Structure formats: structure tokens, C-alpha cells
Image 1 (cartoon, rainbow, N blue to C red):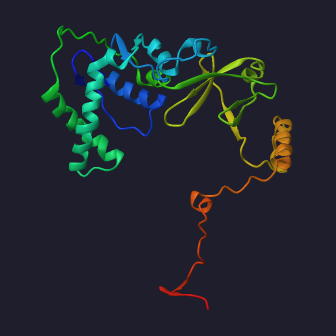
Image 2 (cartoon, rainbow, N blue to C red):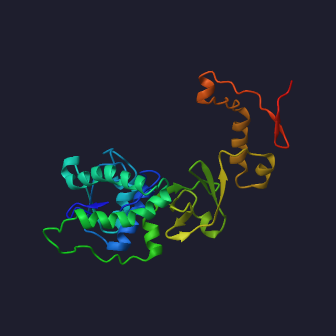
Image 3 (cartoon, rainbow, N blue to C red):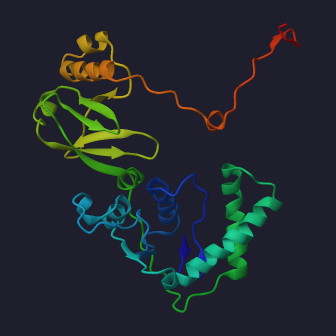
Length: 277
């Protein structure tokens, strides 16, 4: 992230992919260090902006937009690259200068690269940053507890609870443990909280609900059907569909598609290789 008013690098890190959780991580680091800005100025990447004007879910906001809204931070999406020219010029400089700096430092993995970035950012800012025309710091105090911040910077959705106290999520069947509260949730929507560390929480009006997970891709056995009374009908249907499904075709590698055939392996005994006659 770059501050468009000062041409100063504020937050810089390497990530595996340009995803919502990657931006959540960068946003968290920025907020903890600098506080809450009045607004963020971004491009129209799908992480920041809902492209479909008739989208029915998410109240017209992306997960990132929803998080900013809860933190009382406005998001402004530029209509062109030229509209945020300072950021684009800084990115172009980094794509040239930073790559060469990493090569000279002998860095070739993400962990070492992120450790290198803090010093690089300080040197870059000392040489290229410019003081803003208005030096007033408009950042506000974060005033959010860490646990609450985790709940804001996560992926949240609603799921409909069926008669078996189950719902689908990420190709898995989530089954709520039966109790007085969960029995009253049939036909209602519960909230799911997916966190960056892989945890999934199911809540009803803020109260966490215990659950079990059934992976829809795993093979269903007769024992699994009989042991899960509440899910027996669902599992029996899945088992029937899996048995009727044709065997999955063998996926050929690119080498095999080009006509490559592996040679017979040599037998190895006590460190000495021998070829069969």
C-alpha cells in the first residue's frame, strides 16, 4: 500500500496471491501501525468493488468493503490508473528496483523477502518520500480489540439450516450438534466466520454453535450411514450417487500427451545398480 498524498511506502509485503485474505493481512498491519485512515483509495479490483450492479448478496459490498465499513473507513475506487498516478509510478519503480535489490541480496524465497522489505522500505522512503502539502495526520485511533479485529477481517457468510440441522459449506456438510438452541434454528440462517488461520465458526446472534464436518468428497461407507442417525438420509444419498458415478478418467501429464513413455526402472541393491537381462 502506498500513501497517495506523500509518495511514501506505508505497507509492503510479499504474498502468495492477490486475494481477500492477503489484503486483510496488509490492512491489519497498516491499522495496527498507523491507525484508521479516513478513506482508502484503490483501483477497481474485484476484492474492493462488486462488478455486477445487480448482485443480490453482500449488500452490494465485497468482503473487504464490508470490513472497511465496519471500521468506519470509506473506500474510493479510481476510474483509471492515471487517477492514482503516484501509486502507479511507485509500483513501476518497485517492479524494477526491488527485483534487482533482492537479486543482489541473494534472496529467493518469500520469508526472507518479507524480512528484507522493512529495511528496503526505510531506505526507499528516506530517498524518495516527499512531505505532504498538509502535514496534519488524519489517522484515527484504532480502538478495536484484537479479537474483535479478527472478526472484522474474516470471510463472513450466511447459511440456511435444513431439517437435519445441516448446511453446505466449501464442499463440506456442516452438522450442528443437537441441543435446545440448534433445534430452533431449522429454516433459519446462521452466520459463518472463516478466519485466515483456517478456523471456521458458526454463530447465531453472536453465540458460537458446536458442529461436526462431513467432507462431501470422501467415500461414504455403510458404517458412516448407520452411525450418523441424523445424517443417515443425506449420507445414504451421497453413497448411492458415488456408487453410480463412473470411474474418474486417468489424467495424463503434459509429457504423456506429447508421447513420452517412462523407461523401466533399474533395480538397486546395496548402492549398486543392475539391469535385468
